[in-house]
Length: 252
Length: 303
Image (cartoon, rainbow over all chains, first blue to last red):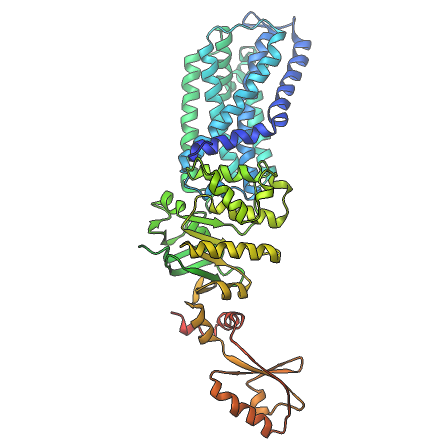
């Protein structure tokens, strides 16, 4: 049996979503597959992006969107459930540092994101000729993007007192950020105003950098994306760690 | 050896409500200590502060000499808390819950101890059942088991027998008494004063966030609670006696401090022409102590 604060909490968080995998893994894979079938049916043959078929372009976007949304869901729903049912005390009573707490929840979120992402990739890559031009970017952006959303999930899970508050966070922040980030289109096809606005959306860089790993082509340079995503991760991690260190809502 | 629990000048406010007001308490290793008080007196807040679940505004708390803030890892390793709320993680079985809890405390191979706890708490047959499938009493046992996985020298039970059937109460107290005899310090909060009276060697009473009584159970009983004559008569009680007595369902209760007073009391009743039909002598009990302390009649005697 694994032991130690971080290891056990990480293991428990992974086991938690794995025990209900039909809901936490299979369902989001099916959703992504439905998006692919519908959009590719409507747009394939009409649209090419960067000279790539629309379906091939869409697949990495859907994979990354699934990684991000599921990473957020994992930490946020685990925390809110533990808070509402009260079993959060099992984690608060043992000698687990705030750093271990943060790392375990975020790492488990990344794992959930990667598992769902891999599932979506496996379910969809039969539909279009995909290439893996620079696979290291695929991994880097998937892990960092998952960590950012996992961290946001920790914030939301700690902040929300009720399920509807968490749902608001998800519906009014996470969903728009992920949908309006170039999952379904290249932002170069947008009118200038929306193009500018998209450059302020950190999720755009996650998806753009991730897609670069497949095609070697992207709207922004992968290095710029890496810089934005790294900065974003550091700021969010620092913010979340500060909340945890102060015991915000958890120890009061 | 440092005190099992040392609480110094601890204050805590929730908004404008003062939950704890300069609380001082020192509990020695091996004690069976009772923490009593009405709802809202601050018992759970005090336990939460000790467990690091709540941060206090002023003062300090330590467990076996380890400060609960600056040395929280050691403090929490020495402390096992059975929370008041009946909480559980619906994703796991009883054994999984206990293994995970062990892991949080850095204990890898804990199967032997887990088996021993399961047997002692009558949980062995439920080891592989999912937590959701258990009855309330069984869930309560698992909460106790979870607090014990790391063999803490100090064990705090926050109303462990609230809403629990007689059988579990017996099993639980037998096990806890054995742990106490093996050297574990036990701190108990309960609303069942009889339990506290039978189990605890020392008792603190809390009211409005302050310690209003603190002494050995025996001394508390002797100091605050008198013996009493309980009797039924065929006529009216003489006025001078009735003023110091109480009556309920035909039974009169006349408190007295020393057995020397019994004969003169009976003589006065006889002199008034009453015939005694039934008579018994009641001993002090903690319920009476509790009521008298909470009514504030003895606040000056706090030590």
